Length: 381
Ligand SMILES: [Zn+2]
Image (cartoon, rainbow, N blue to C red):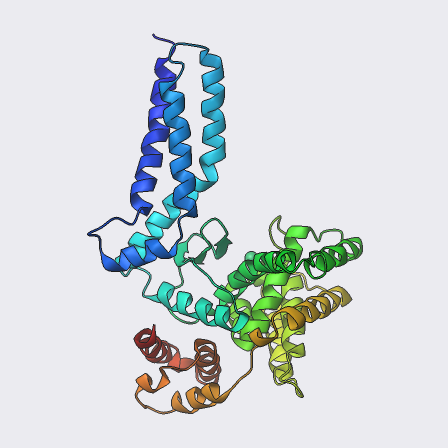
């Protein structure tokens, strides 16, 4: 067999994958307008990187044919490794766009987008990404995409996108520090604090601190709605004390979230102090019933929350969640059979807050509440 045969086959496969991804992500003329809008919002950076990888591959295929096959194999392997993250991202986005276009996400991705834009407006940030369905809740910075895990089909788990927004905001905090020429004053302080925290809790890595930051940010931005969605629907009491490579234990996160919620104030009062206590108690009961090991009350989560709280209060004060007139209006409306369209124009965060409150007061109304709120918010987005 010609020693070049396998090289040619392998490079052709990589080329086909890159071509497919580029075609899927390129907003061309004559396409479905909704799909075009999504592709334009994604920004050009991911597409440009894929096109650059394609050029590198074409050059490798055309140049030096027959010469130094070992070096060309090395170059092909490098190209496969370098482009892996981008190829994976492109494939997931193409699938996510197709699911949204077919309505298989139940319209929840568009609501998530609208919620993120609402939070961005309060934080004076611009987000060019989109939300798609993926294997897990996740944020990817390549095209600023947010993933909602595939079981999310209604409004109840939707507030967890605020945690993914927290990852997006953290990256902007770094840029903001740098652009003001005060790099290290905010973000650097967090990194310095993290060294002290790691001494107290050796299992806590910098990755874990980033997750805790996103949790505190989500409470700062959405208040009890995020805390309820995370504790009631996402966290697994059976794994209460398990520290994963990517995330601290649920026990640690619940303590962080409840401390943050208890500390959230509207200038004079702490209106969510009681809800924080109820959530903490509900979690402890769930863990006991699941036979999971209960953690002792720890000082460290409170220390971490206090530091991140100060940082967010200084850098993004307008992002802080306050129950305003929209919450009061939605709270009253959801108790009556009024037209849900009256909820339009209201901030999504406050409507979701009222919906969660109504659901806990009357669990039998879960499905009808979700339908009414979704209809109202869909009209809006
Ligand atoms: Zn996260």
